[in-house]
Image 1 (cartoon, rainbow, N blue to C red):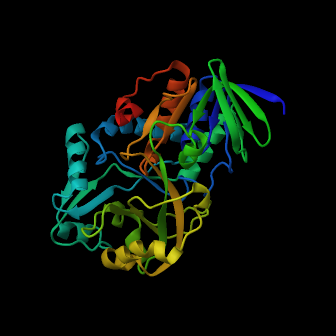
Image 2 (spheres, one colour):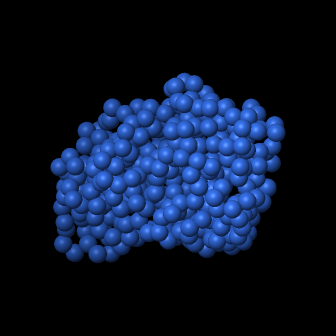
Image 3 (tube, helix red, strand yellow):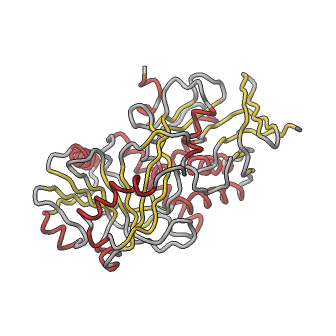
Length: 384
């Protein structure tokens, strides 16, 4: 097989990879993106039509400065493409008073001046009548939140990357790669490619590609379901924002989106609800091997209890992949074990809102070895 030479090879052209290819190509870099599936697919972490974008970050307040820049970059993507990317719906947080998640939301909002409104349960049910809210609950509303459509984003960044000169190849599963002080060599079933630098944005497939990482990554199956509501008018517009709902007898939180009328994805039209809590650890190639009724049960139970008007019928249940780090936070850095390699992984189910910024950061790290963006808390040295 003839060798083909590039400046940078990106392994994995999903959400982070497509944005990275775009950022590099815009800087005049000769970049090759290798994707083992098609560009935008249902075998990874970006399928499912909607991803939440929010700022009052309960996971860790240090993400907020990164989110501020990511919001700016979502706006730049809209300007470049002339398409609506960010759909501003607002976001309801609902949970027992003093719950850890809501306390984290309030802390980040106070520290960074993020608009956040407290509602009584009576006010909440008057404004958003689809929700059933226990009287001992606290309700917060973040007006500047909303959602993006992940398949749209991946395709747009891929198209922009190609327009800027990137080469993106689909159905190219990496068989092996090697690195030396002089560069990297990547072999697929089709060809061998040589470059000065390598970036890995392979999501749940990262452990197979980088087996000697000095930290653990666990791919887990996550389930989302779509429902045909009994009263559709309650699940659109100002009556139904995005939400995160803490249930006392379950860890994690349930989350959902309004009815979204997007017809160019494989997901059904309906109210989408998921359960944000680590799912079953799996081989990522076995993502679609699951028992639909069993896996969807926690979500259908939640709907019956807290969104009864939304549960007319269950339309579909689909899986996606979360790739968890040991502490649930990202790893974004130049590799500690391989020269010329940069990696972004371990997004643990809350990374998509950062997509445009991760692309810029990886381009920085790859080309200059550092970045001005405050990512010190995302380095692997925290694992000791």
